[in-house]
Length: 277
Image (cartoon, rainbow, N blue to C red; front, side, top):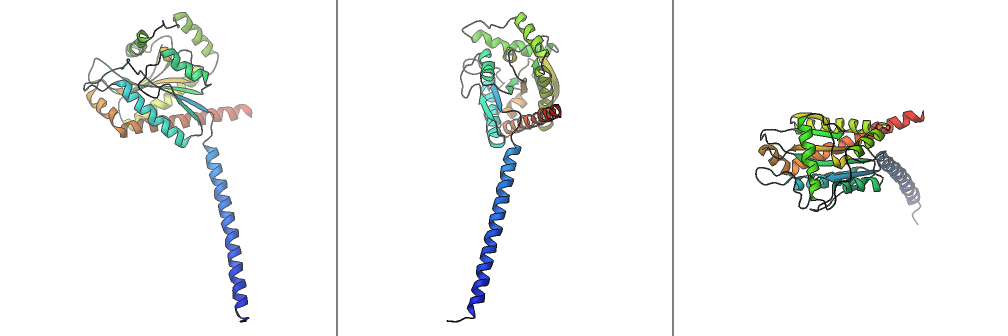
């Protein structure tokens, strides 16, 4: 037996044990960091509802080359859904996942039935002025902000003609809803979220900022949570129609809306923490 090898073997064994300790410590630290990172994605907004406007026999607006708004809306909504699933610890629901007609009131019902924390309706705008372009974001109001807002609401609300039953919501109902909303923070939070979405979209798309607007959109009526309708561009504008069909643009829009969701979530979290102090 060569006794001179014993110290060497002992030294190797010691190094091995030390390495194991370091490895386990590092792995534990990495695991702790990973768990902490995951926890950081958890926010106030636990359930997010995305509403791809139109669908089925309701094509929405149609662009100069025949691109249908309903298809653009759905593509952007699915891209946003994918991003939320990847980056946010929240339930995400779409009011439609394919080319299906869904009534206006049922879209809001999806959000209410699932106790959603936020409702985002995605649309593409249209105008008889072929050069009209840009982004605008709406939240609910009895009175339209301007003539363009009034026309936009009239166009989007016209889908009610496809429904098998009359739209239940009338002017008196809307007034009552708005009065109830005014007594809560829902309307103010809708306005706040609309501002964030508008700013982020205009920043990345580099298009005309048409501003935050209010209008009596039926799809927003009855939403028991902050709710906005986003017009991501003008499909009636040949240049914007082309951009809206591009995967890169759809991804950019989805990224901007996701960023807005995260920013808004941070604001709600800060408000809650302040209230608990």
